[in-house]
Image 1: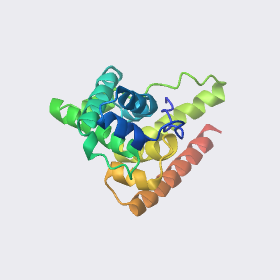
Image 2 (image 1 turned 90 degrees about the vertical axis):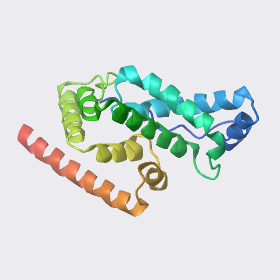
Image 3 (image 1 turned 90 degrees about the horizontal axis):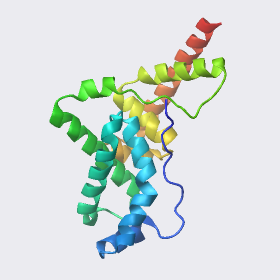
Length: 192
């Protein structure tokens, strides 16, 4: 499974709020700074939602277009990533609904294998087991794992993106981890 890009590192230079302000003033460097800073994590997030690879670039472009069109609605007291990921998630879901193929698209395009991992046979088996375990989760559970582990977002931001309470997501996250550990342990015993 391809490890999605982690959330953007702490910015060096202007803050997201400063870049938004500059963009609203019409400065191209404001828009460019936001794209440069958030493009990798948005691409990783959409890939992890199982957006078909040929569609990811279009979804990214549409997400940024919508974000910039509604930039005045952004609340600078909240993380820009949370706002952008919410737009990206909704853009992908809108696309799925529009084409009436949500299930086919999600099943037909599993996450790409992790080509950066080159290990011995044991590592390949572990990776396959992890992919199988993650594939056994429903879409909301996979999204929660993606946002918390791969994007390293705090539960407060995840709650905003997923539209659920922070407490419920914490409980669900720990239950998912417990289930994955139990399944991994069971798989390990079968392999021995």
